[in-house]
Image (cartoon, rainbow, N blue to C red):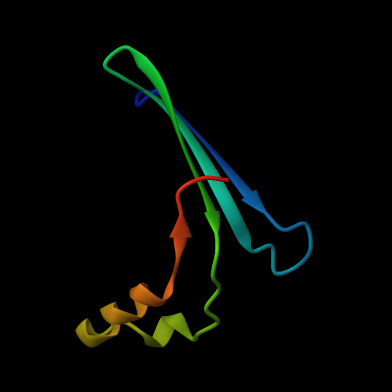
Length: 68
């Protein structure tokens, strides 16, 4: 509430309930702005084992498209 932002997360109805997109609405310079994104790629990985500095390149495999 103090940031005056609203976040909506869109996810699949079936397990494992993967996130497929999101929408964030906020005010900037007295204008209401909305950012939308949708998942375009999926990587299934044992991410809990990917915490070394060299693993940061794995983020490049994820694609994010700007609009739903």
